[in-house]
Length: 123
Image (cartoon, rainbow, N blue to C red; front, side, top):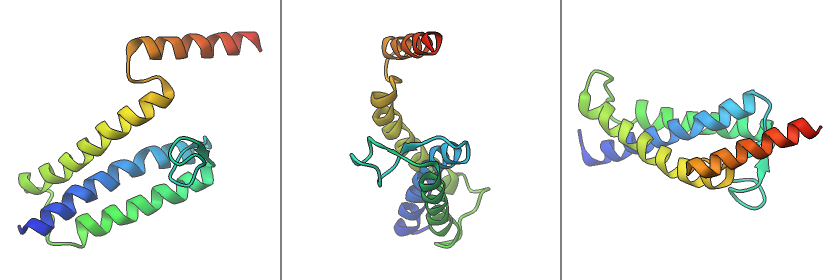
């Protein structure tokens, strides 16, 4: 494997991981943050925009993993490099979206759950 194949697999894993929350939220009919929202990355985009963005990420991941080099699912090195890309983007987005949704600390999560529960009981 050459260095540019390794970089391609790393970013392919990152794009594959980034596709998941956009597709899940979009297919569930829920708005979610996307690069097209105002403010960028903080505001919510429609479920339709998220499905489109998720499929774009999936297509980029396919090209980077399957069409560059000779990615082999039985090669520990190939899978580890793609997995590392998935882990890195997963940790970055968990911290970024955790700030918005209260998922970075237990107290923030408990406060958000309590306020959501109080809102639903009030209605």
